[in-house]
Image (tube, rainbow, N blue to C red; front, side, top):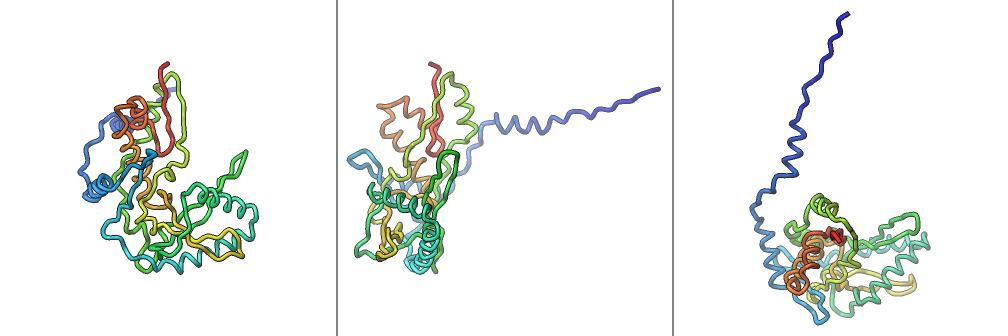
Length: 268
């Protein structure tokens, strides 16, 4: 009896393609005019406060827009939110605690007489794990007015975030590793007062109170420009401002940070 065995030749093309994608240096890209405009805007408008924190402006694509007619949408969504909180007392308690902390830390403040230029609807996102349930209030700057949303008018900025594979490869090269988290990273960057009127929200701590308008005083998650303004461009500016005095820390911020997570290490 004769047995014949056939084996297909190994196709290395896919493996070679992956190798090239990982090992080949990225080609330089032609910079987008809007990215250049966003960088120029940040460079000319950011400032450093006495305590060392940064203050930034919203990077509008053109002149600040008239999108104040969002108020009806914001009121309707706030009514829906209150109805949801009424039916879920535990969620309501966590929501109130979140907003109270926001207020107590000075990250939001009551608006008295100035008419809001944009009112941001908000809702909760709940993350459950074994030990606890974490709530975060999310601000929806994509909510549409008759003239569009706030996010429609904001530049998002260039991509400054390093690729996760590069960060992880460097992380694995250390003999000793550690991780850290930058607490309330967005909220540690202040928004200049003229632009805070584009970050107004509706809120009240009791259903028997009048609905108040508050303004968010810091960089806010939910705005399309926040990732650039925040972790990325402000961190880069911190390195430029303080790198000479703190070279090792600056190297970590340039190389080993992914949004607000630091993954780094050393050989000894």
